[in-house]
Length: 86
Image (tube, rainbow, N blue to C red; front, side):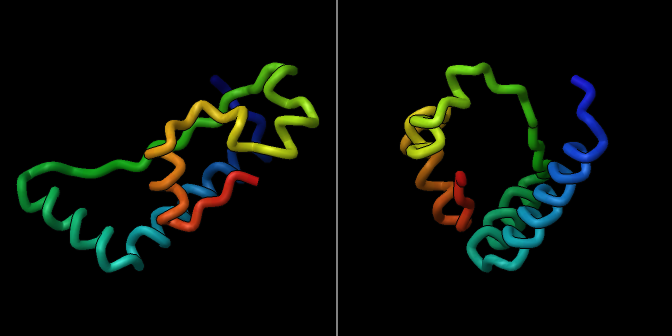
């Protein structure tokens, strides 16, 4: 999917910020080194996808976690990286 340039820039900045945050976290850095020591590379991929009208309703904006397609484990992981969904 082709993103508008301004959205592409925002997603790119978010990716850079996430990589920086992950690299500054000692536990994340240690895990990355362990994975790389086993011969694997790591890649962070972000996807921006359009939402339908139902997903953008005011009630969903008041409680973002209610409409997001993330499991409880996903939300805990994002919270541990201080990623907020607002």
